[in-house]
Length: 539
Image 1 (tube, rainbow, N blue to C red):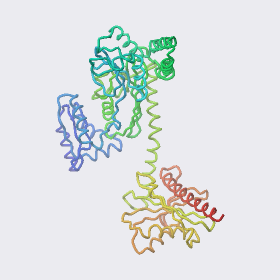
Image 2 (cartoon, helix red, strand yellow):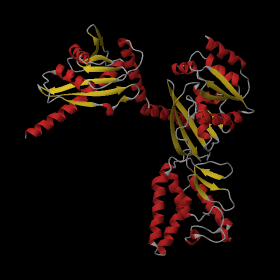
Image 3 (spheres, one colour):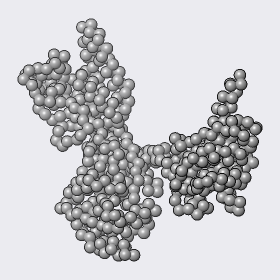
Image 4 (cartoon, helix red, strand yellow):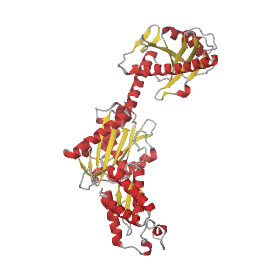
């Protein structure tokens, strides 16, 4: 209660001004940094919303103190937030994993323009074309445009012509051999090309090919033909003009599952779909706040379009900084609505492909461990060994251990094979008992662990007896996984009086079935190896 009193007292004293707020844990460590144009309103929203996701509740429970830094404007708050996040790296702040800087081609606004391949966007440098879908595509376009058109290549104009002038790939503005009208025509061809009007460049290439044929310069003829083929087969097929207004706009939509956001962005430049991007991340606070923060990080390193089409709730979110850079619209009818819905489908499918399986197995694991903690009366998620014995009639006895750790899954480096072919093992119970002795007798284990044996109460009692015969203590919690008549996982045996029957429709069933099948697979594989080895030895 003392914690709540301190927090709520601080909440009432927060300023109603722009700035950054800092959440701290019980060790006074910053765990989250946010920005707001009204710190009081934003921070209080975290604690007033009763319909919070479970992960958000866990996050708020970790907040023991609130601090703030005031600034003059929202822009200053944004800059300060980025600076503080980089400095403190708070646990719950979403960071862009790959520092998204998309590839662009820049036609500079110098007196004698250059064509540059860039990732860093700077204002008033010229005309940017992009973003492109990958690094290879713009690099290839950049190379052949520089090859086709003799634009200036040097950063600074030298006092004498360079090699490019000798090769016919530069008009040499350094020695004033440039016709400005000719230079402008080249610029127009390049700009038209990026607007999807490739026919000017194609005509230029075809004229050159005819010229080289007349001159019997077949090497250059082949080079230009390859460029023409690349434009027709690759570039034109990706540069489909869906809108003829030549505007730049992006479509943003997202799919939310529990505390995950799957975000998709379609980038249209001059009516052409240039790039599609998917991002999946977790959120712990207000999802609109987290989403806007994530979009800020993307767009601060890239070009703003004239229009951004996005969900209405994002437009209504009063602290979204994009509203000052682009016109935000919600598409209601026509082709834009169709594309907007397509973006949502992309976000949903991207999540299902990349994350839904992971989340399913994570939930399965949590349910399985909850069951173990309940029946074994433990509080922690202990590591699990699984033991299975294998044999053929009364020979080729062997055993195998597999190892499973919470939130790490199967750790194959800790798998072990036990060869029992040269021992006096007569049955399954002897094999299990001997495997325990061989593997654990010389081990000094301090941390408790769970050992699951494949079998029923007889197998469980056999391994319990084996551990009791040791003259030193092993902190083990032994249990058994039983199979039914159809050789399928059916129940978990804790002791002679406690047996949990699995419901195949429940998550915990899949957890134990997965462990039992992996253990059985590993043991059978080793048994087959020994059997084959023995067979060839006999020959």
